[in-house]
Image 1: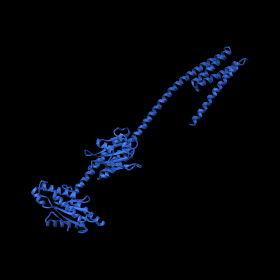
Image 2 (image 1 turned 120 degrees about the horizontal axis):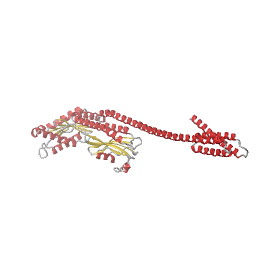
Image 3 (image 1 turned 135 degrees about the vertical axis):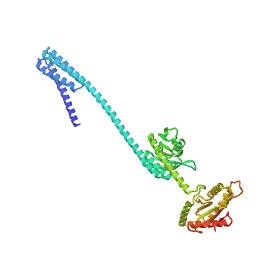
Image 4 (image 1 turned 30 degrees about the horizontal axis):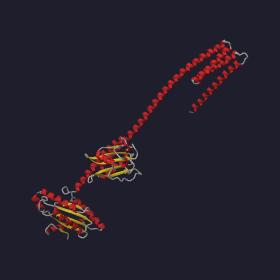
Length: 479
């Protein structure tokens, strides 16, 4: 850059020097012509040669317009000199030389200028091509980077799939899904996962993730976006809520929302929930984000289905298929835990054992299907009568066990007698049209009055159950 600046300075000095000398020579010739004394032709010849040289040089140093003007001035001065010298041959030669050399220099410069313009145009075309190629390279680099980011996302899905396979709890799957969706999609203020509450048939917030500074999520039942996805059973992409006629911007008053992306959670063929992300910035999400979220949810849907299946399997393992009450072993395990808790807190605990009177006779008389129906009806009465914190189980055959935390012996007797009365009033061996009632006998034992261990409580309540049987059945024995 410094060398170019020095050359430009030198060229400027040469230009000014050429103009100055040329004008000086012309001025000298004019001054000589204006003097009335005789003019020396050889001196004029010398000055004209200098003018010829300088005007020819102008064609290579200055623009065409300036060079043509200087040549015209020199030509007029030469004609004046030719007239003043009365047509001296030497001056004629100078005039012809001036015209010839300036004409040749002008034509050459004109050709050079045309070539120069063509070359500049070609250089401009090349520059434009270079600019286009540079933009293409830049766009290719951007596309390559975008593809690399996509590849990294999809590679991360493989790791995520391995993590989801190991999870067997619905809550754990929901938490991981929200965390990963929030991190992988990005650009979001909030990520929410809703599951359908089977009891109330409404959406219920199961897991959430929010950016720093975003207010706590208060909407636990979903809003217009979640309900829209649940109804349509299709993914949703909203670039700007203010320009989407399907939604009302004022309805989302909890926090500012402009962009929304959401997909339904489908287990089997049923929509079981919604995963949704939103942002206060308009046009925060793209179709690529929606496609990725849809693929991501395929993994989550499978994991949720597996977790629910595992929970159902666990439930089947601890509950009786006929009565839907706990099985014997889970009941005994819970009894042990409750006895330990009652020992620490010094609170009472009651255990009730129930046996259906003459159950073998019902089976023999009405058949095993009728016997199964009696078991289901008795289980239903027990379930409805026992307090919410109690635990009911089918202990074996026609026997049922009931655990009543924080209940004394008297309270246990009251619950047992309500069960006895309700069974006698509502359970019939072959339906409500029968006049014969099903009756039960019950034995009650309490902690710590009757026993201080779980097995001893079972043994004492079993003894009292058989006392009730021997005393005539259809009664409660607690002592």
